Structure formats: C-alpha cells, structure tokens
Length: 123
Image (cartoon, rainbow, N blue to C red; front, side):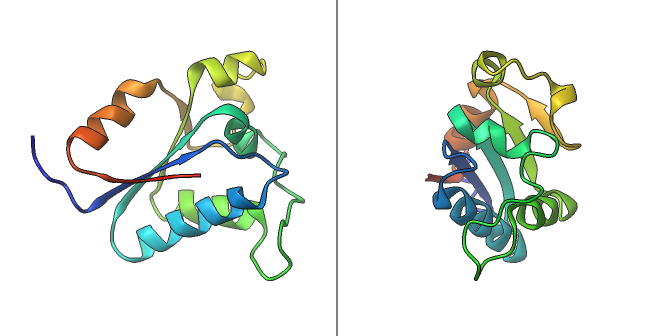
C-alpha cells in the first residue's frame, strides 16, 4: 500500500438544505488550492447538489459563495465528482441529470483512494 498524502476525498451526505454542504465544497476547493487532488463522493441527499439546475439559486450563508459557484470552481479547477449509484437511482437520476463533470460510480474507487493513503473528510 502506498501513502498518497497529496489526495483528499470528501464524502458528502448533506443536500441543498444543509449548510454543511457548503462547508464540504469550501474544504474541497481549499484542498485544490493547496495542490491536492480532490475527489468529492456524493451519497444520500448529497447527490442532489449536482443535479442540473438544483444549486443555481442556493446560497446557504450570505458570507459564502453560492453553491453553484463553489461546485463550478471545484470542477473547473480539476476536482473529481462521483455520485453514489444507489443514491442516484433512488432519486431517479442518471448521469444525464447531473451537471457536466459528474460520474456515477460505486464505492470501489472511493475505497481505492482511502487504501492508497488519501485523507478523508465526511460531512
């Protein structure tokens, strides 16, 4: 097992009605700004964050950027976004329902990153 300390995985289970979702994307963007390879793994209501149009008008805290800005910046700067397959299916979502840059993928790749030494944050 290698120890890849330049990778960060943020597991997000909070959706559009929870301020912790903003915190997750803020931490992820900070990770990218510090030079880390960052992956967001969205589970439960976290998958709602990247449904087309869902975050367009969401701003949890007036002192923070909007959810759309946070997610857009993350993807534009090379962040990876994965959505949990059963969580997406439960809501009737396919990859076509998500913004560009989101991939539906299972827990295997998440565990591969963890096993290789990636730091993890769960919100």
